[in-house]
Length: 179
Image (cartoon, rainbow, N blue to C red):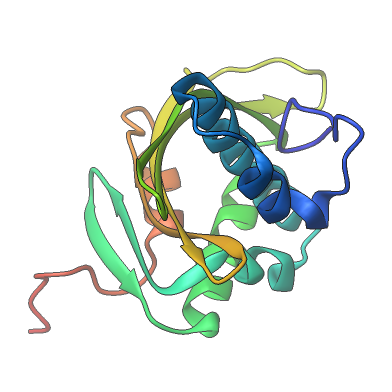
């Protein structure tokens, strides 16, 4: 499936927060639950990017959203800022012939009962399935808000594409002078 390499596994996507709560206290079980949350959010945000549906992506994040690349940091405080970043990423993909990406969770763990730290790698793909760029890691924090999980920050380690980094963080970065 575009944007993620996992299937639905037979459970209702909307029920992921309930699925996480039902799981026991065993550390391994908690790691599996943390990974399920990360995979779910990656699936939905990937679908949003590929299907040009910003509302899905926005439903997966909590504002303010902190994003960081090697270029710097930016705090997104509005849906419009998120839409601008998504438009930039889609344009970057189009300009460079990327039509899909595969995201694979490498590690996910509960940092506390309402916070998950997760690392995934992303591989950008061309129409023929080839990848000319190296996969890049992304570290994300997900927090529980009521019965749902939201992305609150993500750090991209994209070392081979200044254009991709620019697309992710449009506008002024934190600490940048406005002169």
